[in-house]
Image (cartoon, rainbow, N blue to C red; front, side, top):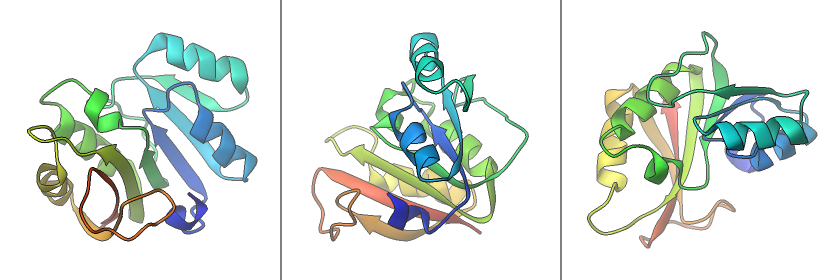
Length: 155
């Protein structure tokens, strides 16, 4: 994950769940904020790391009134949002990026579901440009397949 964040200092974990990724990033000295809609997930995250900032908010409408060097959506976040809200989620995440910041998202690709064509179009509409795409979080070469990790940069 570090290599995907390129040394970014402030990271928003969008769809943070119980905080596994945010807590690890904080351990690696990133300044991390977590957002998730599920109150049980946020409660679990707060219980594990009460010193981190956790917000129970809907990714399709949230506004933290601050920006980040990177926003990460790991763990199929876009597949768990309400159907039809994916573009709004991407737009809200993009709105939280500082100039030149990176939106990093990884998700399963399923036939007939939200895929890379729609995701890339939603990112473009939100003012982001595709920088890199991988088949794994470890930066495995992208050659198609059923999982993608994409890095889009705020332009």
